[in-house]
Length: 47
Image (tube, rainbow, N blue to C red; front, top):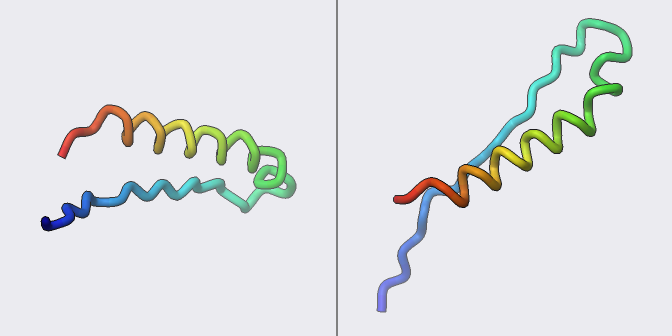
């Protein structure tokens, strides 16, 4: 029996680091948004 490999979803959160302290203050929120997006796409997309 042949195993089907589905495409993987990669989410890369991007925070503009040019302003001092902005990256650090948004890191957790941005990662949570990226994880929620990956979960939504994984659940709803059909191949």
